[in-house]
Each structure stands twice: as C-alpha cells, then as structure tokens.
Length: 152
Image: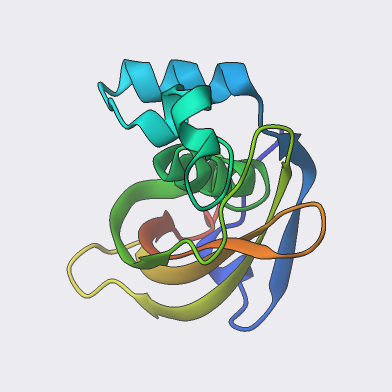
C-alpha cells in the first residue's frame, strides 16, 4: 500500500525531493484560470501579454502553488494526514511559463505532538518549487495535522 509518512517518520531538516516533475501546459493554465473565475489577461491573452514585462503569458500562481503541494502528497501525506491547518509565507520569486517543468522539494521545519488531539501531531513544512533550470519559482510554508504511527 502506498502511503506518506507518519508523524514519527518525518524528520526536521531532511530534504524530500518529489519526482517526477510536472510540465506546465497552456491547457493547464487556461483551464485552471477559467475554472477559478480569474479573468487576469496575463494568463489568458497572448497578444496583450507580449507587451508586458515578461513578454508572454504567465502560469497562474495558484496553479503553481497547488501543484507544489500536490507533488508532495505521494511521498509525505498520502493516508497519513488528518487535515491541512494552514498556509504561511508564500512567495513567487520568478514566474513559470507554458512549457516549463516544475520540480518541488520539501523540508520539515517544525513538529510537535498535538496537545488537544491524542494520536496526532502538528508538522510545519516548507515547499520549494523550481523550474527545469533550478530557478526558484515558488515557496510556501504549510502546517498540517498528521497521524502518529499506529501501534498495531
């Protein structure tokens, strides 16, 4: 059975690299942008975007963020997370473009047992997304409630 890691198995400071990467397509961008009712021309209007600072459409940053979190699921949280508690500092220091490939890595920065929920622990992770050239395109701090390893 494929699963993520239980609270005790997550180690502070360890770099978890999530592979394979995800090549971002024009279809991804247009579909996600329109599904979320975002009318930003930087995602939808190629002719207009050519005259903007990056000279082309940008991938929707919310899609970038969702993909960064999604890439970590199989390795870290599949079947071992109780709930996502929140997101902290989020930044997008460089844009992603159609055709770029996103690779994500995660470092656990904090963890503690839950004071109010026996059998569970709180974990803070920092996700970093990079394009195919290694340029950081996104960072996000995320806190989640994890199950402790079952005793039986």
